[in-house]
Length: 366
Image (cartoon, rainbow, N blue to C red; front, side, top):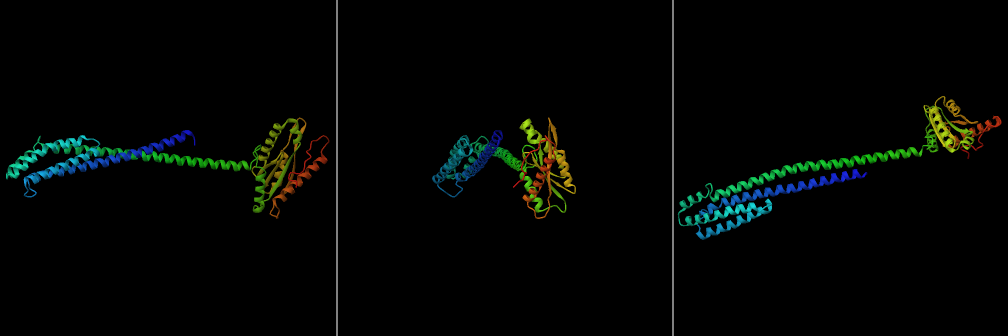
């Protein structure tokens, strides 16, 4: 994977994971604000129970007993308010609550004293005055309202941010996952293309681009194993006469260029009716199909000729039918090879003096 692609993928994964981490933090903040709201609601209930305790309405109790209950309630309120320090992330809220509560408890103590003396109505009126605007009870309720509303806004904001963070995290992770899938698909496609190219190269002659000896054997085996439904097929083995002299005079690069030209001529001659192969050196093969297969091979051989600086390049040919007669690949090739050799011998016997002929064994000689 290229360096930039790898860095982009890592960046997307890291950003996605960072977004998920942020979502978890924000969800934790939402949970804390909900718990803080519950703590404020609990404080409201605890404070709301104090007037009844101070008036002695929970049962006829001595003044000292009621005061002990008020002291216990004050400690419990302080503990509940203290929980807000960790839930709200600050100590200001608990201090505000306790400041207003501290102003309320002396009033409750006086209410307890008046009620214990038998003046319940007077104590009730005095306690009611504590709920008027500006009085300790009123200010404490205002503090509860303000702090509760603040927690509600913070929770709502955290929920919105968590939703946005979740969407971003999902988008980034999906993008990263899509990139991985795309890259894996691309690598698989490239691997398949390389494999196909490797397979093609394995059966292709590098110089001419024709099929090579391996492909020739494969095609012959397939034809002999399952020949076409009555369609004639002919194997032709072709050899260039005069190529050695041409190669010696003009050099190997010129010889290679000649082979490449011959190969293209041969390909064009049989492309609609068969296939052409280079099996090594200046030896070629063709497999032609159809009723005129033999004539096609003869015609293809006739086109393979050149003349340069007194050297004439011609083509010798040996052909044999490819039939389902029980013959093996080696037998078919040997028959065509023998006929090529006979053709070359006959050409040498009739050639005029000074002509160039290669004196070589058959292409597929045993």
